[in-house]
Image 1: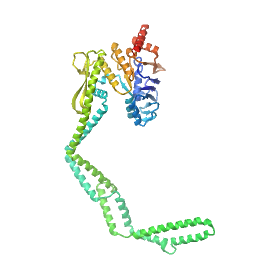
Image 2 (image 1 turned 90 degrees about the horizontal axis):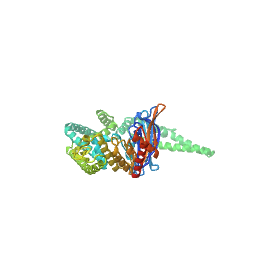
Image 3 (image 1 turned 180 degrees about the vertical axis):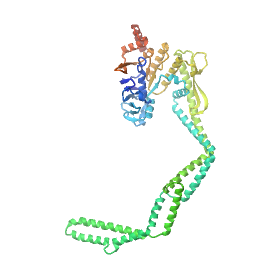
Image 4 (image 1 turned 180 degrees about the horizontal axis):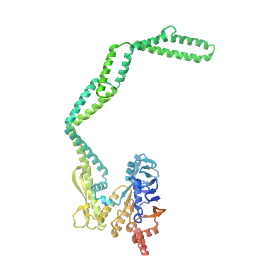
Length: 555
């Protein structure tokens, strides 16, 4: 549940910190005082769209934060664990900053997160029903989404959509292969010819640098033989060779070291130099012994390099790139061979269609069960909302295979006894739509798992006895969840367990919103204002106190 909401420089709110309790609470105040602004701030914290206009005039940025307790929210705890976010006091602290430039950043428990992550967690923390939620019920997509949520089939619906797209992709591949058969065959023939040529060339991945090294050695073999031979003479074979002189010098130094031991270090170094020189001479003799002039091999290497260079020029690449080019062509040919196999493509399309049909049938079954239960529950709820004799039904209309399944969802209503069911969009008036929408939202919210429910003036267009019943419904829902409602109805406000009053005031030419949690006396005064308008009499206050007392005893 929502524990704490902190707002700074948001629209007309300068600085605000609110603590929230469990149960059913209301936000009340004059029209335009900023009641919905608080819910807009909460929506932004939960991943709503950020805009520069949200920053209070004259400020560089707005800062928002909210703390949610996760005591009864296993889904949110599991999400945090999956994201490796540590919890403190079994709660999450969400912070969001929006710059005047429109740039936005967000953190969860001090860890920077993306907007997508913020929305994922937000969907598990709170469900906000906006002022226009009733009108959204007139849209087919909204009706289908609401039924799927009530049926706990949102994940299944998403899977059906993914399977449908896979089926359509397989179908498109099969149709493309049929219509582009000649073009694909031409490309396959070209690839086959090019692959045969490179396979015949058989250039290994490391062969080209080896050919270059061998060619360089063979082309300069005479110079190498002459140079290494001369060096061997200078080092070991001629009179006064370096090896002989080094050996003599080392022997003489050892004799001198017998007279002065400090020369032993230099003698050791000469010994090491002698060993190193012997190893170098051994390597040079081995190299000189196996190096020979080989014009025939040089010619072979020349021809081989010529073939490789010709192929590289032909295919517009460097010699070392030819092996990779061959692998790429082989992979492309394999795909084209697969694409040209119409029987395999048709089989894959049929398999994808069967997979979609199986899961779509499961979705239909869930929708049928949920549609029947929702129809009965909403019809019963409407009898208490001054719509006696009315009926509500969720109809599943078969349609062509689609991403949303094999049926469309249609909300129907008969506003009066004896009338036929007709689509909701064609029957309900504004007041009826508000009552039907409220009944649906309360019922579907009760079946969901989100612990905090927020209603923004969803009780608009009703009053009197109906308003009392709406208050009863929200209060009953508040015994199961944390429920907050922005309302202008005293009958609804009187049912709340706690109440905030929002007022708008001007100071130094700036409009600010002020929020106050009301005590018992404050609630009497506020509900009296809601009852009596501008002029509040003692009778109005007495009526307000009676409403609060009656609702307290009913609770």
